[in-house]
Length: 255
Image (cartoon, rainbow, N blue to C red; front, side, top):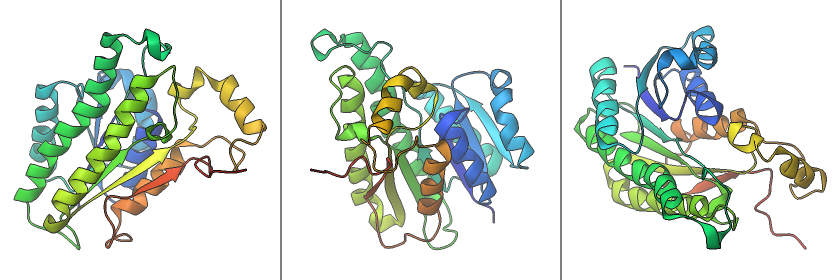
């Protein structure tokens, strides 16, 4: 029986690359994104051209009803959920100094990046627990975190806090679900070439050129997708609750 993967925030960038890779790996793929499908077709053609069987669900991760609808539509269309990739996330609308951060910005970032991730995972896990086990595990959850879980950026503190919380979500669900045969992992991208980083491209170009990253290039969405692909495979059956840095070695402390 063919398995099904949900990828949130999958209409472009990292999420689209993950959706495409999992489709190539043989999954039915459910793409969850905020815009109407017709507005995303320029990017979604990548899936069609690769011959990937996908279903598009529009909604916002921060809305309870939209999260429930995502699970319901997935089960109605494909019958089950085997993989959840929590990729959807937002940066602050304005990069403001920590002393100028607004509650509105904090709430927006936390509601999507953290609360949405937490409660969508809860819904999906309850569905996974109802299903017949196919293969060597009951399910896989991969959270797309960020190097910002540990690296301070005082002009986008709400983002750093949200991603640090995602790491604890990874730990908590890994602990709770190991005995159920559901494995939980995290990938932490560094500087990846996406719309989110395009606003500060000059800054990151300079950091790469000056050697802040041992692997001196921009990360690409496919770099993240490849790591997610391995976690979703049967290559990691005796580990859970861990993360892998997809950051060109930026996490290495050097003298």
